[in-house]
Length: 554
Image (cartoon, rainbow, N blue to C red; front, side, top):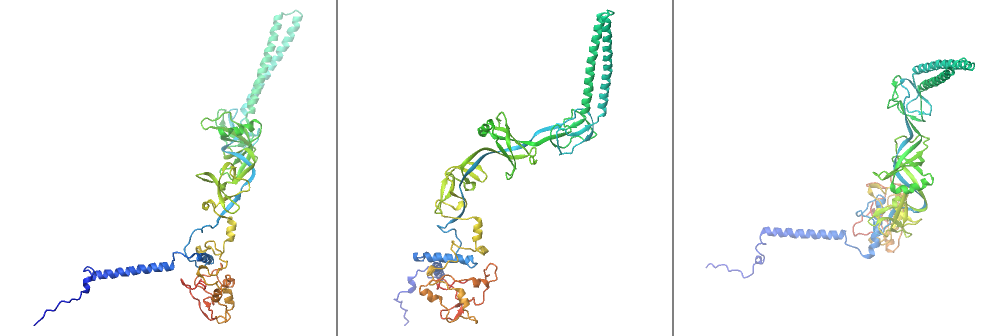
């Protein structure tokens, strides 16, 4: 008889797993999830191993020494471990300073001015006629009374002769009238004629005398017109471009004239000042004190001339609120030219024992105008000041500073109240910069000195770095080391500390001009490292967590 297989009483293993997770698709997903969790865990472990979250306080000094050593390697062209960073907290900020001084301060009023000639004359012809000759060159300096041009004289010579002839005729009539008067007076004495005839003869004489005076005036007028044919310079100065050429007819009514003469020695500068500055100028002018005026070029880099204030206008311009002044300059060298634009500096006053600070030290902020003052402990403090007049690169300090104090003029962007500073200038910074420090952006890190010895036990190291120069001197000819070669590890274990070795001999073998060997090159024997047992071998590489007593590879 066939029996039905009996159902097993043992519990089914698959019954404990839900059906949804027992399928092959969900099994594969679960396996992938487990692998992902494992990978994340390994990544976290590796990160914590290579980048620890912190270090014990006992290793703080070691970390700083390691940072300084790495910076020194960077300065020598070697590799630098770790990323770049800003200035370490508490590190001194390099700044440039200047001293506040006590001295004489000259108060100037600045204005814009225009050079104007002392006199400007347009030379016209006094008579009409043909221009025969020009006796000057354009732009020539002429003297007053110097002959400039000549007009045809012949018509005027004729007029002079005509007037002289008329005068001679009238003079002859006058002489005849005087003789007649003498005869009539003799006859009257003999009672031969009446007195009326004598009176008529006297009147005729006086009439002829009047005619003679008129004729003489005509002669003088003709001679004067003849003299106007010679045109002379009315003032001394520089001639401009002539407006008419020889051979043309010129007239008294010509508006352009013949030429314009500008008097440039001396010369004047007209400028304006605001009415608020007028009281400081009126006092010295009323006392007869000559105020100094300086003319500067457009860029205010060169002083062109120095003179004095000659006059002031009699009213203030209501439109601009300014008053015009005129300064006179000798201009012997002719550097000032009419209609030239200049900057005028008017010396209004001179103050003695004024506190003068460099203008570059003045800063402006929400609290007003302030400076950074360097104290004796090489720290800075922010101090509010009040400024006054400015002269050149200096500015008057009316309140807030005293003579002899040092103020920061460069590097203020990195300063804060109480910040520590290092006084330096551009020349010293260039001299102190190590050779090769600027190559490939490598340099010192954190301000650590690369030449300073490395202390024992810093940054997890068990001993000091060995002296490479001693190893190279004790090298055997075959490239090995002698048996008596000292070992770095026992010295470190004994607690000894030795400074960093002399690299000069090793650097002399380098081909680079800066004393830095390019990467990929090596010197004979440089690839081997002495072992404690005296045998030679390959130089070990430093690994994270390994022995730090061996020197880092280049």
